[in-house]
Amino acid sequence: MFETDERVLFLGPTRKDAAAGTKLIVGAGLRCHTCLSLDELCHEVRNGAGAVILPEEAAVGAGADKLRVAVRDQPAWSNLPVLVLTAAGPTPTARVKTLLELGDVTLLKRPLEAAEFINAVRAALRDRGRQYQVRDYIAAQTRLTEELRDADRRKDEFLAMLAHELRNPLAPIRNGLAILQMADGDRTAVRRTRDMMSRQVDHLGRLVDDLLDVSRITRGKVELRLETVDLNTILARAAEAVRPLIDARRHHLTLTRPGRPVTVSADPTRLAQVVGNLLTNAAKYSDEGGRIDLILEEDAGAVIRVRDTGLGIPAEMLPRVFDLFTQVGRTLDRADGGLGIGLTLVKSLVEMHGGTVAAASEGAGKGSEFTVRLPKLERDDSDGAGPAVAAAVTPRRILIVDDNPDAGDSLATLLEMTGHRVEVARSGSQGLEVAARLKPEVAVLDLGLPGMNGYELAGRIRAEPFGRATVLVALTGYGQEEDRRRTKEAGFDHHLTKPADLGALAAILRGDDP
Image 1: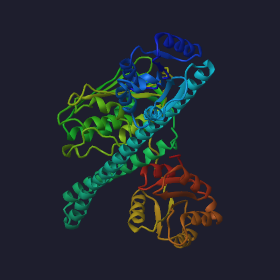
Image 2: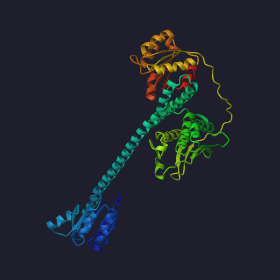
Image 3: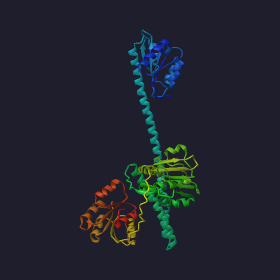
Image 4: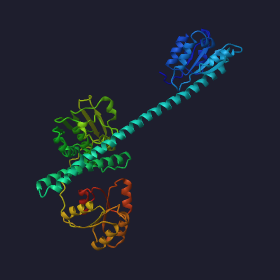
């Protein structure tokens, strides 16, 4: 009802007049519907029309009230143009007033002059077209308002989820600190507590990484490091990473592979993240003891399927499961459902690889299936490269400058335990003094230092004769592309985000590219 309609509804004074008027309108290239009665006209008005033409006697005679109701019973944006064919000579004032009560009324005197008549009809249709534009604008604004309300609601839900997700690991970490204070040399308790705290810190790191990833990806700031990858290896790696969660929930995971290499051009880290997120999603949204199938297939491309027997996805949610901050069926018994950004990351990363991802479910309680399709490479069996062999550690002179004592000292302890000579400074000026004495081969500098910041300190070290050969590593909580550009311009060789990736730092100390 009330669709855009350019039809002219014409109720002629007589059948002859109706036929003549219809011929004129159609001859002008306009659409016309001839009505044979006032009842038919009122019915068509409710269905939608561009303009109405009717004789004066129909507009004021018996049934006029019905016409008035039909014309007025329309949305607020609508002001239907009505062309009234009046009798020759002056029209009584009272009758004019009655006619004008119909709304947007134009009076046309009979007998009609053809050009004047068509011009009036076209003017009425132009006016109606502007009304349709207003209607469409109002509808678009209404949709936008609803979308903004929905986005605001999901943002509030996300902030509540974020607070919950951060409190989850903080509570056992705090408990662990209390246990360590009371352990009194109980090595078993210390070891168990240490392992627990390590897991929780890893969980916190993953939360922060996901938040940073979704920010970078949605702004197009992520670059893939593509290489030829066998998906068999990626699936095995992802399954192994998610194994603790799957075992904790007593799920049964089945990995089905074709028994031959399935190669794609991909960033192996990001692709493992895709499969890991899908497996994590399946594990979290399945009741204990559920079944999860991880399947690798080949057709025109490479196909990865993650199928579960979990809570399923309602039909109305299927189009939205990849939207940011969207979660399905979040309840207290599944309070560890995450931040609602995992599937957004999956979709973005898959599309960056030139692939697609789709979700399917038969409904609530009937499980779900996610299918990733990627362009496949032809197999090349000539590559006989074997596994990499870990290089021996070469002791380095290392300077760490960090105003956070716990961060600086703990990193120094780790590096000293692997055979390096390490000194720690708490400020930029102190760091410069230590550097002059130590002449470090590697300097790991925090950027937010009191007084002399890390950028200035890097420049001062680089200006010293010994500093030309020093490998400068920025260690900071900021990891966006703009931050990396700034550290590179300041003379840093590498940029690491907190907490430091020890594997990446070890690669730097070996002289490798992390």
